[in-house]
Image (cartoon, rainbow, N blue to C red; front, side, top):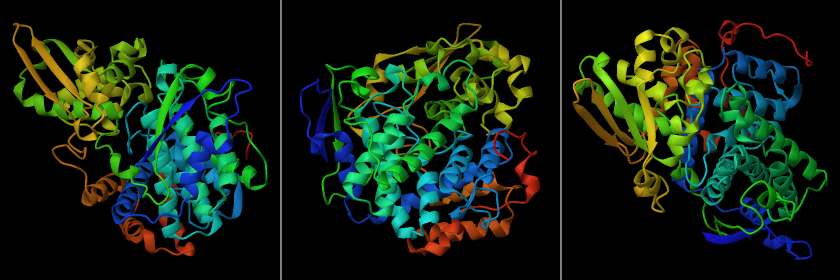
Length: 501
């Protein structure tokens, strides 16, 4: 890896194209380096993971609406949409949209946390859609996904968006554009223009994840993927883009991030260096914001040590700046304490999540968010006794330069009415690579089986899993096997109409 300084260049200060971050990203995407076996295997895991969480959300209104929009754009050859028959092909950018929403809806797939946040699995739906449409092989798809993960992870390591209230999908757009560039074997010039365009049109504020969080939380990454597909299409036709998009005097760094006097350091693979970033990412065992994963496990661990939870006077979660300010009381969002809040809001409230996990000793992607669960009087009472505080040591460990020493958990102190205190801590979730039970292939398959139960019949489950296991060996005509078809009754009520039929 080589680190590059990325800063604003003032008017009249010439920055050669080859020195621009977007060009360096294009160079990584255009490098035909081979994919390492471990990366290929992890790509299969993440494809299974994405499909698992997508099928569990097929009947939800947000997903049904996105699917209906895609179905209004049939195209040949096109791409498949989760839930629909493989022969019902849609224009690839709309398939990317529908599948991206299905994958993100439950906030239940993979994550990478560093200077910023990310769900790198969001790269898969748009890249897969283009691969199906363009007749690419499974091996080409794996190479492309490796690029998407690499670019997004590298940007997340080097450039913090959230401190300036810019949504993290601003790193996803360029990553998808780069991944599609790898998939299609495009020239550096074309990828460069697509990366610039994709970033320009996918910068938005973090209000989508603040206050009353709506369904846009699921739509935002799907929009970024769709926009990236369209950006690549324009670039392939010879259209240009704003440049330098990161370093220009009116560019992203100068006006949306840390300003013209700040320099970021972004490390990227060199020519011939394998793209391994997917191996640094981690998935979720529980359907909640990643920073809640270890705390759910900690609640389950602490529950046997507690008796009557009505005797709890206070629960204080000592944790990192990120956790305190994004899903904790440091966010200052009253909605995070509201029993009538949306599911999207509740999965960004560690106070609610810890209360339910402590009471139930478990977490479920549907039952734990049910309206009757959120409004239960004893749950509300416990929930409102919980607060978070930022502790510098947890913040330091969250950002530790050594990935093997990073911590995404916290320390919990529970005070009972008689003054007794019970405390414990957990660095990382059980499913994390350094956790008590790191996720392996059998765990991804079990997650898929659990979430597909009652939605996808056993024969279809087996067919999909067999195709996923053979991913690197699939021919172009076989990529359609990487989707899932369900009975129409599993797709939920017919959505209300919009502009599109």
